[in-house]
Length: 269
Image (cartoon, rainbow, N blue to C red; front, top):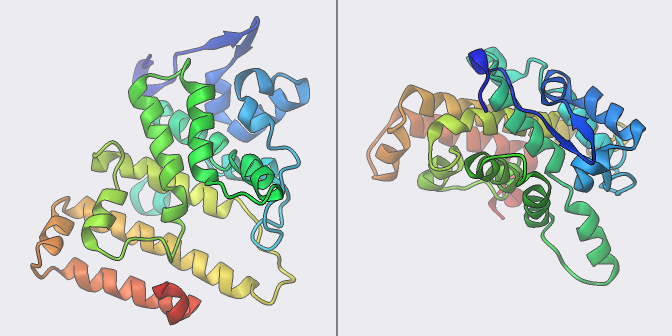
């Protein structure tokens, strides 16, 4: 599976049509658009192909439908983001492949959610997106790889949230891991940045400044927490046990800053 120096060496085909993993990792947004225009995207990622025309919040996703959001997010995979500036870019193609696949399949469940809402029903679009990933990718990934992609999808809304984000130290430590390993948190961090930055907040909305400010604070929060854990992987264990740590003051300061931006009462919900 692994190529020399971490380069992707796998390939696969469906109905005689080949999928170039190398081209996908090199420029995922461009390659997905190429497959979409040729009508072959649905052969490989039917859940992604089905996101055309799937509506989202016009305030938080002024870029358009779910497919438009995904192309924007995928376009950031090889662009420098805050975590790349702080910790260096991710150069291993296998890691980039897993992040890209999580980006192609996160939010695919919004189509199912919208259909459920039209019937007066409720549905967790995140869980449904994870199901789509399993259906589309099980044939092409190892069990471990697929589990990492699914975990990124399931954690993406918590990573970008002020409300759902764990307030307890232990919960944060569990969040910043993949398959129970801190090493996977770097992939999760980059995935979350692509998701959050791969959208347009409606500039005509009076809430645009507040939302953009909150998102910037969340991105900084995630990077600073990762930085703390990178320096000392046992740091949050010590904090959870009740011991003092300089990391506790940093974490509390981050929470306070976000609370000021979004409003104290909203943040406490």
